[in-house]
Amino acid sequence: MRARNKNEKPNGARASLWSLLLNTIYFTLFCIVGCIGYFLLEGPINDIINQKKYSDEELELLSKKAMMSLSLEKEKANWDKVVDGIHIRTGFYDDPNLKTVIASCTSCHSAKLVTQNRATRAGWKSMIVWMQETQGLPDLGKSEPIILDYLAKYYAPKATGRRKNIDVDAIDWYVLNIDDTSQ
Amino acid sequence: MKSEKAKGRRKFMKNTIMASFSSIVGMPIVFGSNMPKELLPIGFFDGSLPPDLIGKSNLLTVLNDRPVNAEAAAHLLDDDLTPNDMFFVRNNGIPPVNVDVNKWSLTIEGESAKQSKTYTLQELKTKFKQYTLNLTLECGGNGRSEFNPPAKGNQWSTGAVGCAAWTGVRLADVLRDVGIKSNAVYIGYYGEDTHLSGDAKKNTISRGVPINKAMEEESMIAWSMNGKDIPLLNGYPLRLVFGGYPASCSGKWLSKIVIRDRVHDGQKMKGKSYRVPCKPVAPGAKVKDEDMCIIEKMPVKSLITYPKTGATIKSTEKLPIRGHAWTSADSISKVEYSIDFGGSWHPCELKNAKNRYAWQRFSAKIPFPEEGYYEVWARATDSNGDRQPIILPGWNPKGYLNNASHRIAIKVI
Image (cartoon, rainbow over all chains, first blue to last red; front, side, top):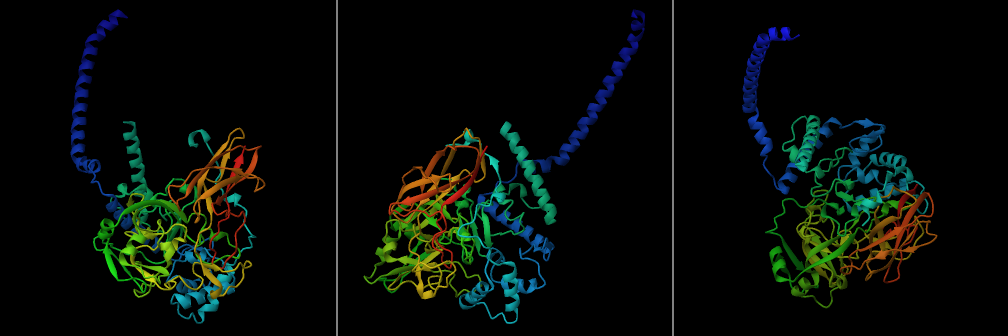
């Protein structure tokens, strides 16, 4: 064992010299690549680090612009998309007469003003009359019965009694940690 | 260091989210990583983006986006004073754009004004004594969604209410400076919002209050809300604030006040708007316009703002609750809770108000007798002896003044 070790010593020295050389080459290469990478990426990195600080107002304006373009793009893509019987853009129930309803009922106000309400045919009629008398809605002509049929069909009142039960199924149940939150 | 790292992670996540937004939009969102997180998801997930909800939390429930109408769920109103971004929005038209506060002015005129006088915003701020009052504003239709038969209009749940610290001047001081004739009956306001039709000649809404209400100490012309500018959607840069009346009386984007020798007859003063039957009617009854009377006081009411409905607790624990109670009377005298569907009622602790028409804090710690499903109900009584009903109060055609007890659901396990 000892003799063999003695014999290998010179080889070992050569090997460690060789590996030192290799390491030096690797290190130099690493430094060069690193420097090139740094110079390439310096601009973007500094941009990220030194991002301009915007005032709240500027931020709101920028966000608003961004979101408006987001909204427009989405609207274009989903203009007449229907999912599960609901016309996505307006929230109306899909129906052969939907276009008539959209044309007459969303030019002055949001479709949400319709879809959150419920009434009988007579009730919807009275709302149309009210809009004609006070809000400048023109005579709906042949469209009126079509619109009334549509509204009475999809947005009829539900019997709820004097007061509804709390909608237990709609509740998002969670565990309340009392120690953390009591004041 | 830790927080720096956390910030880095958050930023990375934000950037990732923005990148996915960008891929949907098909273009990069400039300064996306700077976009305040509160603004990111507004309307994004339900497909109805109201781009004009500036200054409002994305946690609000948007009932209507043209005009904007939005409310906060009960648990979001837990602050002593409602934060500006959580304060409900009930707009009838389109808010003014490019408001220049340096050019904003308020004109007082009318049959019962001794002269016509115009004040700049700066003059209002310097000429009159300033006050800061905590005043509760509640939409007359808050709670409409519970009416049966249903009433038309925005289907408000419980969140069209808020109490803020308003800074401004007393309306009475300004009216006196102009001079009020002895035949004055009412004041009416005009604001700078535009009608939805875009017709510049049409007033969106022009309501008001009786002269006695206008002269009350707490009736204000305000330019500041919780120490900040009033959000545009809540009337920036100037509005009226009347506690105890339907919030529609508190005109926004205020530019003119008329002192009238008759009941003001502006937009939404007549017909059935903000009116209830003068005499009680059966649910679903048809009521003629002439039998409808203007709402001149908001009823006693309360809201449980903590915990959020749906809390599950252990049977060994006591449930802390808290909330606010408000009235058009001088003060709230008592708030009680029930966990047995009104079978028995127990007192809550009640704090005094800073001033009249401010909402008052109530709180309690509730033990439960055994495991199971419970509802916590709260009811307030005011200094007039008026108390909240458990079921819906008098039905009315337009669904105003629902002050039925607020209820939250609790499970004890």
